[in-house]
Image (cartoon, rainbow, N blue to C red; front, side):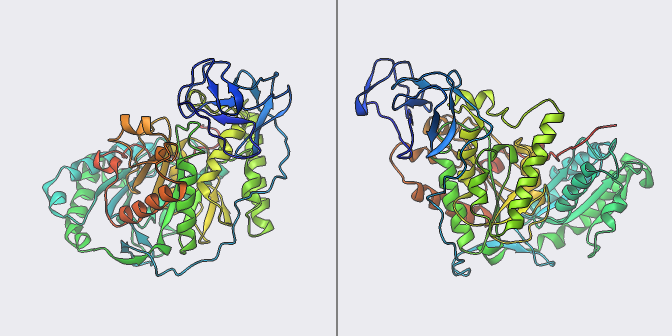
Length: 501
């Protein structure tokens, strides 16, 4: 039996929950005019050229030619438009009051500065690519040692390495963003102890970070000052070995979920994402916010065209002004680099049934639930206001997640329809599959199958509660699939803005 999923009464397209052959009689006296791949759109009525196409009850584009009922609707007959009616109000907006913040708890690590970690790592951070090999060598050496294995309360050594830190305008915006990112990781509560290592002559001097270290809790070292790579590897390794027993004494304690900061992320999207995993994650996000916790949505290019749904939820005008300023910055940024904000969806997204950036953005914003927007953050800017937040970032997943973690996220929830195997050492990443086919093929990489919503097995609320419960279990120490597989060492990817000189 073939069926079509219609998401909103205003929609003039539906979604195929399976491959639909040509000339199949469907509901509402519609006959498929072409083969419709699963997850793709099919016209529910006659759509004239230049008429708006609706999905989610929102405009996702403009018909570039007449479309008959039952026709496949995709990039061959659906186009992106720059301006469209943005006055449609969200029908899902709720009055959000914080509930009893002592209702839900997790077992976390309370740090001396009052912040809460979900993991107990030791961090070795390079300030420049010239020290990247050294920090990796130190982490590899220690992670293979018997001493680390014997200290069961330590999750391991994480090397934060990258390809930047020099060849930059030391006074420019790009350098400021980079420094904020390093600062955010240096102070992250999932680290019990941190060593910051530079070469000595780079733009990102360790003195920049040392000056901001009020608690003097981080060790700063330069390869040139210590006499070379072998000596600094030996010195840092010895210092860490000496502190293992003390770090191992740190234990988990009962903490309210108001201390959770959850990064909301998606990658490798498909047409199901906005129907299953994204709204389910939005439900979980609302539950966290209602109980005093915080969530951070990101990826500015992937909320473009749906930003009105965030603006409607902003608690003050200042937030709206900042978000509009960020979008204006992106329009200029893409323009001067011979691009545009509508260069998404990617080829993989389009194979999954997404056609325009409007359609993708409306589905992506669903991850943020319906809670009020309490703040708009710059990339890697520390979280200041509890509740639902938006952070400016690129749509490139590793780069975006790096900014969210630098802002303080201690859990990542990552929806995917194409099978992104993303992990991120330092902060555990929960992978949410949007469809059952992909989940079954890649169950070793996926934590939850939200395709059950499309299958009619679970509601969005039931799947959202499952995500919420797994967030609490993961924050308390349960390992995600990416952690079990040992992934996440290479995903640190700070946003590099401006010329490399």
